[in-house]
Image (cartoon, helix red, strand yellow):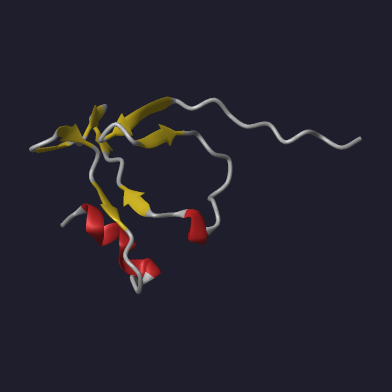
Length: 80
C-alpha cells in the first residue's frame, strides 16, 4: 500500500515586508541543498536560546546563502 505524502503543519509563520511569507517546519530529513536560501544557527545553553538584536528586533542568528558560497563556510554566516 502506498503512503500519502503528508505535509507537516508549520510551527510558525509570518510575513516580511507584507509580501514575502516565511514558515518554520520540523523536518525528518534535510532538504535538497538547491532549496536552501539561508542558514540559521540555533544555540541553546543552560536552557536559554541565543538571539541577535538588530534594527528589526530580536532574531535567530542567520544569513543568506550567496552564489558561490562553499558548503563548509555557510555556518560562519551566522557568526558574522
